[in-house]
Image 1 (cartoon, one colour):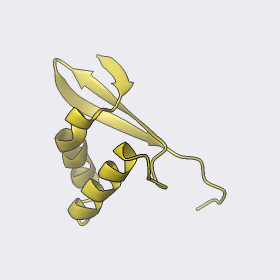
Image 2 (cartoon, rainbow, N blue to C red):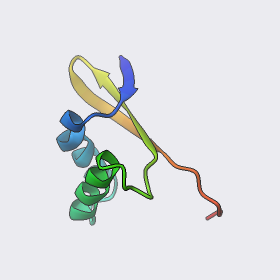
Image 3 (cartoon, helix red, strand yellow):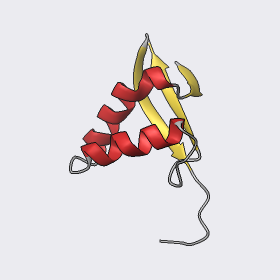
Image 4 (cartoon, one colour):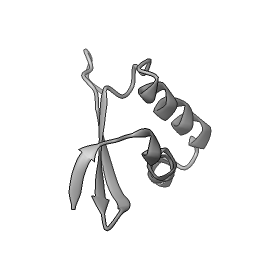
Length: 69
């Protein structure tokens, strides 16, 4: 198992995993991921992925908020 920063090659698998978690937002996932790589995201400051045998097995997105939900 390898934990590493996400890179643009991870977009399809990362988007797929996000869609599995939040199925009603596929287009929004792609927009947010693309914004992350364009360094314009306000939702994702850093993303790490878990890679096992060359396949992504998980991810964590990090952000600092100035409010609590």
